[in-house]
Image (cartoon, rainbow, N blue to C red; front, top):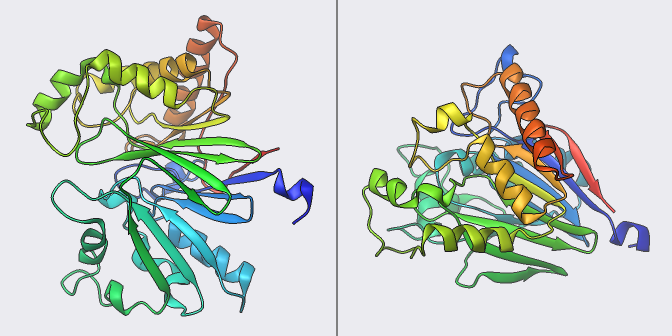
Length: 308
């Protein structure tokens, strides 16, 4: 690999929607597939989440590699359906020559491997996970920092129902933070009451202020911040505890963390392209008022970013 390629990271969006795929004319510009982002850096292919967008990624990889083997790492943030539903349709998993390492944390009551296998069990799908010809290794994470080749990855548990992690991927060209599902910590106690949980489960929460500070430090100076911005501020008031962010809270977090580029992600299934445009403008106005110089855009299916 040349020095110029080694110092370049490519980020491509294959699925940007939250909750459920939303095909149709009103979402054609930003896209309707659920969560999936690809990073190419330092000789590695790293895939973030396996929503319905991973089907298109699989087709692209098959076309690119042809008869050559494909080797990649898939990082699962959590096992809500919109983040794993595309895995049964991922073509590289159907060839014995390909190697797929799947990383993620156990669910609240069930192990990661069991959850991924269950969605392909006989009542739901004709081919079981164990029957796939590809070399698939599911690696349940125990630590909050690990390496994929020469790429360092840090993780942090987020404010979302169940067990949900965000990842920060450190490449030689810069860092990418991926937090597709995260609710602001400002109303943590109310959020936990809405979910019917106490602070004694798999994931232990600190105070709302400490959690917010920790998250801002985790994201400090990241080059690209891909962040859950599902709701408008007005919509969020009716969805406290559902595990998703609002525009004002997202912009505030990006500003506090001094992120260089903010990508609004996990678009609500009820938001058409025009609504996403309005949310981008709201975010830009809020950042301008704060005096922070942060580039803001909405994640768009098929678009690419290059870090140099």
